[in-house]
Every structure is written in C-alpha cells, then in structure tokens.
Image (cartoon, rainbow, N blue to C red; front, top):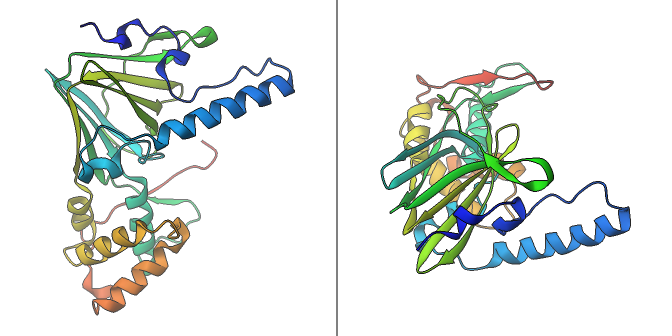
Length: 257
C-alpha cells in the first residue's frame, strides 16, 4: 500500500496547523484562523499511537526543543532533540550553584538529548513550503550540534492508515521544514539524565527526578523550576558543593542574531 504521505502536495494536506494567507480581509482571516486553531487543538487532544512511557515526548510536547541530529539508517529513523525543559533546569541549577557568568545573554549549551525513533519505515521525505503552500523537497543538512541557533522543533502529530503510523514533524530551520514518515511504530529514548550527570555530577539525579515529577503538575511553570530545585536540594541535604561541574559548559548568544 502506497502511503498517503507520498501524495501530499500542499501543507494543508498534512492535517496539522497551517498558516492563513495574510492577503485576506481581516474578518475572513480571523474566521479561518479560529477554525484552524480549534481544529488543531482538537488534534492535539486525540489519543496518540505511542506506548504510555513514551507519550511525554510526542504530540508536540517537545515544542521549542533544539535540533541535534536527523538520521535515517535503513528502516530506522532517529530525530535527536535537546530538551527545552532540561535546559531550563540546567540554567536554573547553574545559577543556584554560582556558575552563571555575569552576562545578560547566557544559555547552557547542552545538549540534553531525547531520541525520537521511527521503526519499520517504509516511506519518508522532507519538504518545505513553497509558493501558495505547495510542498517542495528539502534536504536537512547534516550538522553537529553547536548552539541553539541550529534549528528548533515546533510540532508533531499523527495520522494512521492500514494499521501503520504516519508521523509528521514540523521543524524551524529558517523555513518551516516537514519530516513525513510512514512507519510501523515510534518510541523515545530519554538521555537527559545521562547528559545532566555529565554536566553536574551524579548528585544531580535526585534533583532532576524530583523536578521532573513536579513538572507533571500543570501549575509548575518554567519560572518555578528554580524554586523546585531549592526544595529538592533541601530534601536531599545537598549543598552547592555537592555538584561536580568539571564538564559544565555554557554558551553566550547574540540576541540580535
């Protein structure tokens, strides 16, 4: 059976959120935008064909994470991201233990990896949006993760056909780029704790797991992560000297870039 992804000609065919033409009168644009947003929010609430432990990494939950790698090998495809939430955690912890440089524009360089994996791939292509929403071929260039300017993960969603999964990913690589994959299953490999231990030493494990558990509460916003770290450190009797920052890295960035 030929995947319907092969016949997708325009961004509108992919079933996700899509831009509305700015040439429309405002009333018409507003109406279409409302319809588009409502449909997209319903899509995000639909059950996803992913095992329970891996669901926190799919359904656009990795939004704003950074692209580390995109690699196809035979019938397997792996999209590696640096988790946005783990970066927020690292930046807060670094500041708490006194590692934050005296500079306004500072980011932890990471990466804190999550591998999103497709298994049994039978069809895949990458495309960007051409004139009037037509899809055209785009090749994601191979690159080594060096900074947060390399590209970001925007959204992902699922369709299903003939007991197979169609996983659609939208990346921001300057233009919006769509990775269209027809496969038998998807899974996630969480490497964030390994990377955090590399950066802060083994004592970070308990703190990270406590904050991760607290993050399941919708009331834990990003600006409360520092408070959650303080609470966990106190619970485990940890001081700033308990973290091994030999391999800690940080990066400056130009906000005008």
